[in-house]
Image (tube, rainbow, N blue to C red; front, side, top):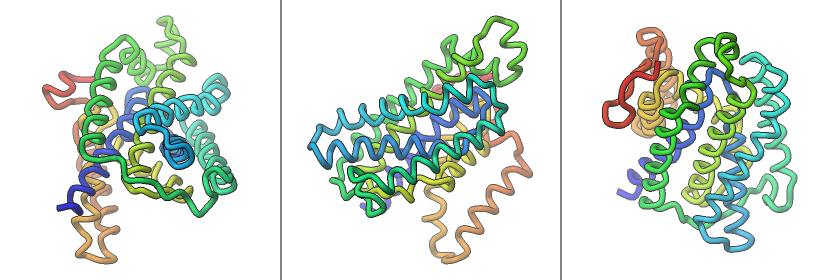
Length: 279
């Protein structure tokens, strides 16, 4: 039972990070190949605080969230002010993520490439409660006028700008919000696995987060979090296939893109969680 509980909790933690990518990519329309960097920043900030200074866990989570949000300004201000197209922005944030990984591997406070061994503080109550709060905050954000501005930029940035929406500020707000969610996910992940290394936060993780959003539906929140859960559980469920489980995982992505190109939910939401359509 401990094994199955651990898989479910890891799925819940991944769902929080996917919420962040859904806000930025699914609703604002900018692709990102570097959101794993924000997960790593949240993980290492919270991990360093509890490891070196015995900071209370809740403060470590909030610090990880805040640091991820602040770090997003470093890459967000110059790139979004320059109005980089989505593909160029994806490459820029990918470079940011790789630069961060190199820094983490060479800092003494992070213990370099050897990583940090932490206490297992992310129990079921913590993870479930933080996921519920993250869902509520994301719901409120997307139902506010800011959410409407995100979606208008996604559909037609030129028309949105002519309507008086400041593209730079709105996109930057979306990036900061998404980075903060990823930072929370990283803080929980670090104290669930009880160990972190820089190699954990690479392009591979960013691609998995992005794949969950695309397969779940670019205009949905319900779809990405469902697919995120499936993508976390499926490799473990297919472990009996041994070396063939990862090809089976990739095949599922191909099938979804062929037969459901709009994603699992498209622009729809689960009634009661995110009512109505996001379009």
